[in-house]
Length: 321
Ligand code: DGY
Image (cartoon, rainbow, N blue to C red):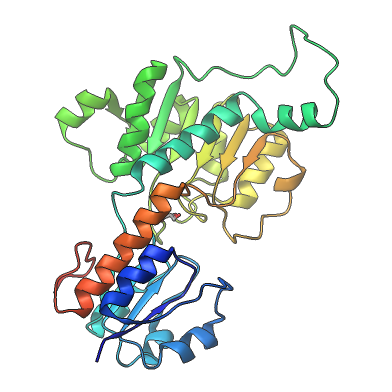
């Protein structure tokens, strides 16, 4: 008898083919997210769960999956999963680190550049047939090159973002729970700063910390007030790291210049006000969404699930015994 796996969202054909070699697979190719009760019902006879950040995996759900041995998240972030509750039941939890670092860093840069050069505003202008010709003072943006980049969260993705700053000849500051090794600081030409120093001095503040109770509203009204009025905030990590209500107010009143956002506190709902602002670039949580990266993420999650269900140790186990 093969172990039974539930895949909660649409995945690629090769992901299903690989899983099918080792498991009986129930998948959700129509990709209509399961309501909590339906997810629990489908989990009742499953040994493995391959899920996405849109699925909440908590103690009440685990109660209804008595056979569950592994929860394989198709994401590097795993704040949707109650890891201690899984550990208490002997359930392995895995994520997909590494395969999405470059793509996610690219998106942070795309948001930075788009907000600095007002790309979404000017695109609307051109498409709206408003362009009557070149003017010296038209759509003035701010320079990215030679500016100061502040990165909060200097893990793998933060470091890739910093690496790309070399080409723009930027000064790089970073803040992290733990200072990174001196040789990496040197290689990235990045200087450690307190959170307060970083937000005061940076022209671009980019957030790359995972979401947790400790990082909830890491950037709120107080931090926004410390930022330069010309500064741009980029959040492509997780909603909730920024206090969206405070950010809308700051963007509206010119406390900071602009923002580039890929994630939101109650996504897919946006905080009222974002849609009325011109000085915010909005994206629908696509940080890792390139064809190659999303395929790699799905396959990484599948390999983790299969390893766990065939007696091995998953390569990306978050809760080793
Ligand atoms: C992640 O992997 O955590 C991303 O947010 C998914 O796109």
